[in-house]
Amino acid sequence: MWQVWLVSPRIVDRRKGERRSRQVALTSAGERRQNSDRRTSTLGRASVLPPSFAAGWLCFESSAGEKRRLYPVPENWDELGDDQLWNLSRKAREVTVRQLI
Image 1 (cartoon, one colour):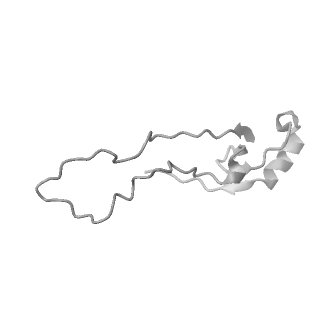
Image 2: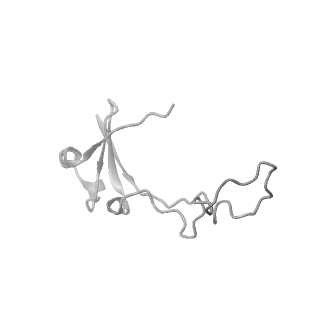
């Protein structure tokens, strides 16, 4: 048994503005860095998704927990029959599921 759904990525920027942009008074230990803070960026955060995923992808998941991704998303995929969806799932790339501890 398989389920399939469309995944549409959103750009979520958790950080608004630059990190460490405020000047903070030094402690008695002093500042050891010679260069500017490398975590400060004026470019903003780059997307972690490859460009090929920007328009979204289909996610296939089996009852056994296997997951696959298909991109680009075929037009009218949600109108396809079970056999056609099965064929698409076989073309999809397997996804390794990472477990967080």
